Length: 82
Image 1 (cartoon, rainbow, N blue to C red):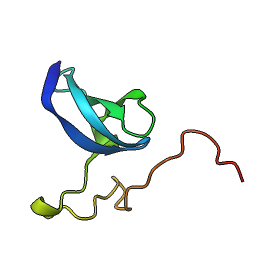
Image 2: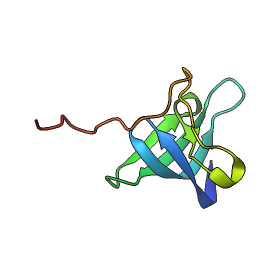
Image 3: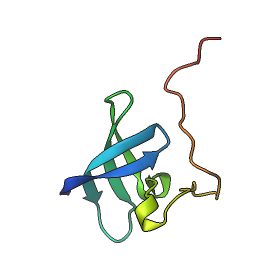
Image 4: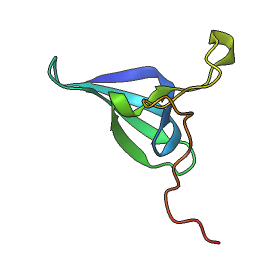
């Protein structure tokens, strides 16, 4: 387990957030990122395959993509009232 200092901005299935902890269970397991979600303050842990580095124009990362090659989109936490 590693506390990230500074935290890393990540795109997750729950929206953008800051990763504060990285958990490594060993060579036969995914890395796990503990992320504080910006919009809600919720704390979630995601496997490595579910997160992407956030947009960073300076580094040329202008359109982060999901694992399936689709642009990352925010997933609503609750149903959207019509």
